[in-house]
Length: 397
Ligand SMILES: Cc1cc2nc3c(=O)[nH]c(=O)nc-3n(C[C@H](O)[C@H](O)[C@H](O)COP(=O)(O)OP(=O)(O)OC[C@H]3O[C@@H](n4cnc5c(N)ncnc54)[C@H](O)[C@@H]3O)c2cc1C
Image (cartoon, rainbow, N blue to C red; front, side, top):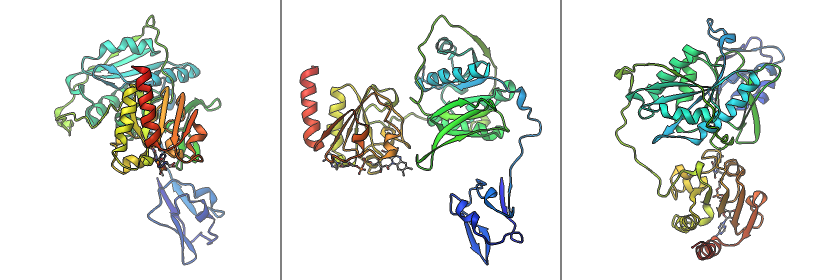
């Protein structure tokens, strides 16, 4: 993609300056010129009254016959022999999309000795499982998985691909999309089929969560997107369902793997499997100091819950990033979410507001968190949290 301003055509009206969301057009000698902030989004093109802006878009690969792409695929993530919940959630949603398109939903299972997991994938709604097994796939590796996934897509031509917006999905999706010269919409919060075009309508927050953008991928296939954990509900498994396993043999050349996994280091000071937690106790800047998290951890322990954090507390170095809840952290939907000293900024709410019950503890009665809270306690965290922990310990033990 490239953007050019034809200076001989430009009449210096400055309309394009207002149309640029990145402030990347300036006037020089009464002519509009692009600065290096231009992201080539093309938003300026239609604003020019004299067609002096030329946006050249790459054409879809000549050989790509869009009509031959069929079916919805879900990339399956697994760890320590267990399928991650996000993959099952996406099978459920993928099934709905596939039904609307009158097509099948398939799971892509890559790993070492993972065939057994197919049962759960069929039970969750998959019609087919594309299976690639081998020692090169024992742990997720960018190179090995990108090679295998790209190979499968080129061979079987799926129309739609869903991946979790997780560390692995965010690593794999864009690489595969780039190899296939197709688009990928990251971090979607809802998916549907446009009734007119039968394209997937990928909806996601944009501009810091201030607008919801719906994105289409009309010219290229597959249509790809990542979706955060807990955006969709996990389907109720039906173990009477079966499906077809399509096994693919694929040899990976060692030279193609540029990284070597030496060790796995857990960075969580406390359990940080937030996405699957039923109870989360989170702390924010209102704790005032890193030691405040000891009190939060204690409450979480009594409730058999997990510790979360606002970004402010992560940025201050009080908690490691894997605990961050929100737009740039994890999306969670526990049964109970307790926010201690968290103001309730929109970016934090984006990650937790679908929790069943929200309990907010904040000394400011006007804190925005109270707008989404089921129960609000106005008070100092250092008085409320220890009192709550002591009472719960008494009741629960
Ligand atoms: C692009 C972008 C992405 C972002 N992503 C995220 C994200 O993923 N997650 C996230 O959390 N934020 C995110 N943020 C930051 C977000 O905008 C807020 O700055 C952040 O959530 C504030 O964290 P906080 O509520 O802990 O701190 P503050 O906003 O400072 O709130 C502290 C609260 O504690 C209360 N308080 C103070 N002392 C006490 C006390 N003793 N007892 C009780 N209450 C007390 C105060 O009244 C206040 O309401 C993002 C911002 C941007 C621009």
